[in-house]
Length: 283
Ligand code: SAM
Image 1 (cartoon, rainbow, N blue to C red):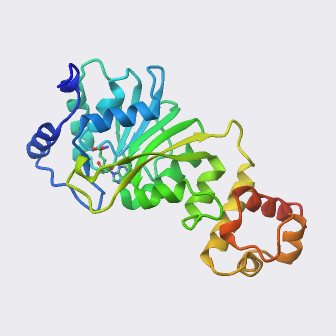
Image 2: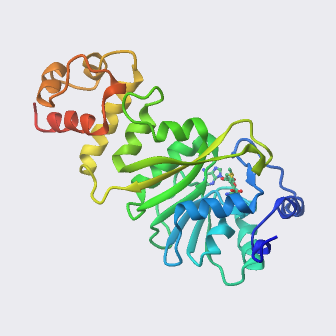
Image 3: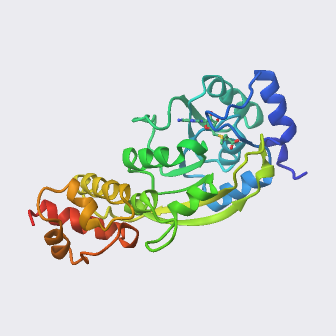
């Protein structure tokens, strides 16, 4: 045991807390709790959390990861949808680390639109079934987020970090790339969760670009084009985009300097942005 182990939750503490609260983890809310302090410290280290950071955590659960973040001295805003978990979290953290700086909000991370303070880092073990919509909502709603590290289902993580041409390149890859650079930062064993999930997990890190690549109006149209193009993945975008574009798509593609035979999986987010700009310019 390291000197600081008692400030984090291990398997015994997680079980005791759940029993005390009479919590049975639900699949519906993606409740797989981390029971391994080493993994928690690895996540916090890879996220590069510093004392001066203001961290947003979505889905703090019983507090395993929260305690790893507050341990750095950073201030944490934790958003938890499960009322029972949200209520207990402040008590757990104050007991383990009386000096911790934490605000808990009982809300849906996919819908929240305001926070008590500006946040610059996102660190979360996201509920698996809704990790992409939560990420997209947060990036869109809280532009102060500069970087982050999230634990997601392996398949989702590889999609988020995929480049054009990759087999798994899809809507999450292109939309995530609107905001910044993404990379797989590490693998996570299933055994560090309770209950043990039936999917593998990875850590995905992102760094926002210094400046947004386009305006909000351009983003909205670009995302609409992405949805239309990947909605009919097997078709050339010349065909799939025709359903959302009034004018001639081949002409648009020409003015965006793109091939008429392009398929969605070969296009970068900048390519989709060029099409959106061509539409805005009335080409
Ligand atoms: N962070 C904890 C850990 O690492 O042990 C728990 C992670 S668990 C995979 C996901 C957590 O997200 C659960 O606590 C669940 O209740 C919560 N959750 C699920 N959907 C949510 C949502 N839409 N908004 C906020 N929290 C949510």
